[in-house]
Length: 134
Picture 1 (tube, rainbow, N blue to C red):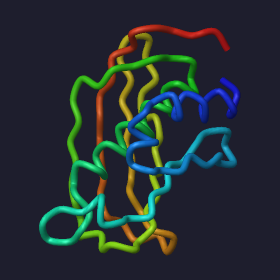
Picture 2 (tube, rainbow, N blue to C red; picture 1 turned 180 degrees about the vertical axis):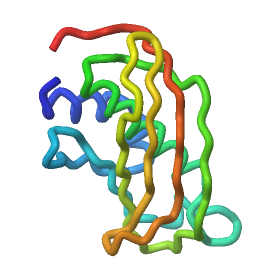
Picture 3 (cartoon, rainbow, N blue to C red; picture 1 turned 180 degrees about the horizontal axis):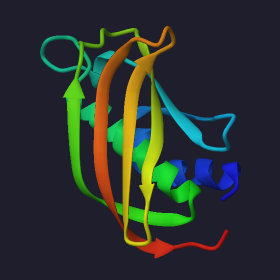
Picture 4 (cartoon, rainbow, N blue to C red; picture 1 turned 45 degrees about the vertical axis):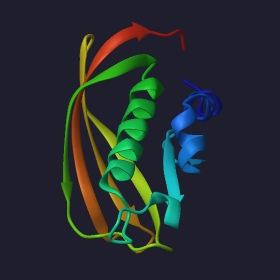
């Protein structure tokens, strides 16, 4: 899958636009989601809502699967939150595929800032609904 197609895939997912997340290419041919945390992303404690991080990770892992020419849906996902994200912080997704099966894919994703501080770890299992042409 070409990098431009992966970026288009992410933009076609309207949640990225809703969150105002940027999709940036990576050196390995994948993509990384970036988000500058704003008030609209916060919970009642003025920190990033955990659902926003989980949504970013789910989208990033789906894009990693799409990079392998597979459309997937999430079967299960576990998020471990390490520390709160303050408004004004820019965070990034680092998703990778752990298992690339014909029907099941397993991925993990880390949510980090530019300094590499870890905010959340997400593990997910995906079901392959369709293989797409490269």
